Amino acid sequence: MDLKRDVLNAAKFISRTNLVAGTWGNVSARNESEIFITPSGVPYDTLKEEEIAVVDLESGEQIAGLEKASSELPMHIQIYRDHPEVRAIVHFHSVYASVFASMRLPIPCYVEDQAQIIGGDIEAAEYAPPGSWELAKNVSETLKDKFGALLANHGAVAVGRNMKEAIIAAQIIEKSAQIAAIVEGKGKKLPGDDIKRLRRLYLRSYSRGFVKGPQEV
Ligand SMILES: [Zn+2]
Image 1 (spheres, rainbow, N blue to C red):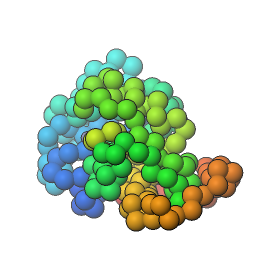
Image 2 (cartoon, rainbow, N blue to C red; image 1 turned 60 degrees about the vertical axis):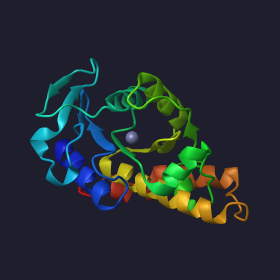
Image 3 (cartoon, rainbow, N blue to C red; image 1 turned 180 degrees about the vertical axis):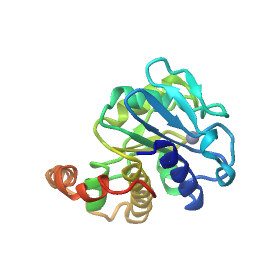
């Protein structure tokens, strides 16, 4: 499994699909001891594999890569340390997710794919400055066992058991925010028991096909 290639492909994908503008946002994947993360300020369209930063998970120190790791490295480290099942992270600034992040309101769970892939309402982490350990802790705590969270006045983060799943979670977060913005006030939320059942089913069976599939996105 080539995690550097996963990170590179995912970074280009979030740029191509407008989940981020310019060099904003960042993507990472982990193995047992290392994090592979997009560099700070390098345009995604020209990004090369050798520019992906390699960071030691335990020390948090960069150990390889031609460019400096993303300034949001603390958030990635904190999430990996607190959530061992998480193997890939996508941080992005898409429009509708940012609308809810700006209101500091959760994205309510109206549709089944949100229940399955994210695990319910997408909560907003408390505000803290970008790149800070405070933000890292707020986001990691807010995630709990879900695959997505909002960063107040900033954007969103999606996680997964591999890169393919994290990318799908990112797309579902933005789609859920669009739906919530349109139905707000009129939509009927999915009942909590149904959310739990759908999530359980997804984690145990529905996801088997694509989480074990090829890593390209
Ligand atoms: Zn950001």
